[in-house]
Length: 199
Image (cartoon, rainbow, N blue to C red; front, side, top):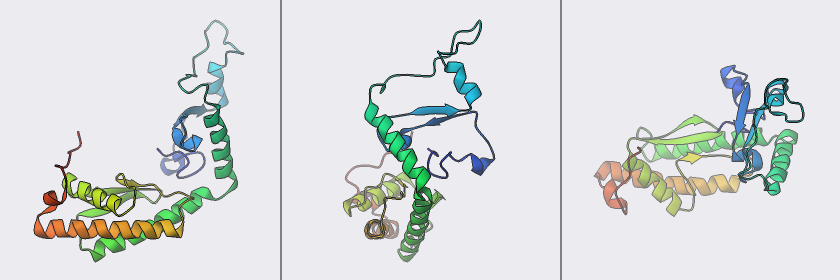
């Protein structure tokens, strides 16, 4: 979750922890099916079948669920190259900062900032609400207004000012619906089915 969002090497600088091994998900492959395990040479060589350890079998550090998918490997090279040679992470954070300010202003304007809020980091804006019904309503209305929102905003370097403005339109509609639901107590009537509670 933290790979390629804070820094190229992950989020270890936030905690002061330098991991021995790091697992990377599909983000490292530009969204294509790929996961990787990285670490220091001393640990990674434990799985090197070309250099077996004396008296011990090599560790198995490779699976092949997507082993034949060379497009994902090419996407990984392109993604990491892009991230390393441009300020993609910085641009994503700047977009997230702009998005957070815009969403917070809209929520305050609608009078729902105590019941709907953004949490976490500018590269990972989690939408928190006073209850699952309110969250379902917010997401439903944002999606109806054209923003594909799953409960978290993931700003990227690819998002433009136009995307941020489109999101503002959707968030405004969602915030207004939440405001009506909180004022009238009719939030459940605005949903096509009962909101699901998290397990």
